[in-house]
Image (cartoon, rainbow, N blue to C red; front, top):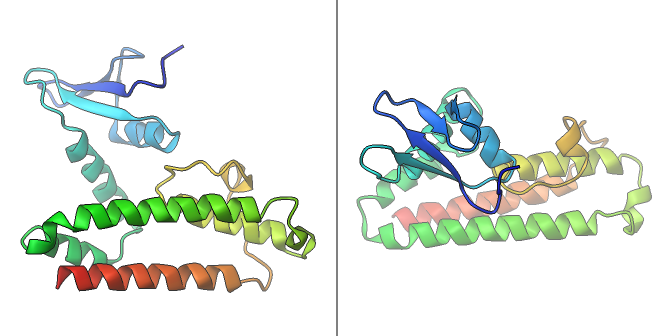
Length: 186
């Protein structure tokens, strides 16, 4: 059994093929994305130079998902990120993004706790569907970085029955974050 506390080492050969050192086989970008969704840390290094290529490959995975229509990042956010590379705000943006994702993940944990069986709302009609929808949304927003342990992990979420209040709150929070990012880029 592999030691999952250590990052999974992937070596890139001169032929650009990616080699999983734990299983001694070649892997694809989609395989790497699956490892990450399962909670595994991954490190990708160039075999010849020893350079760490992890960031480059993670960005490539995101770009491929975005190009297939699996959009998570709105165009405004992407535009502001590009602007941040050429402005004074470059030093602020990485910290802001890291804190925003930490806040999102913390909110997800609290939301899942509040939606537990001890919650009196759990008896509300359509609660399970709403909970599954919220878990699926949070999983999509975090790129699967945080396992939810709920029904959304086992099956796709079912639409909620007349219960869009939680989704509206999340949309409002995302809009606020988007606005903050836009202001940072200006």
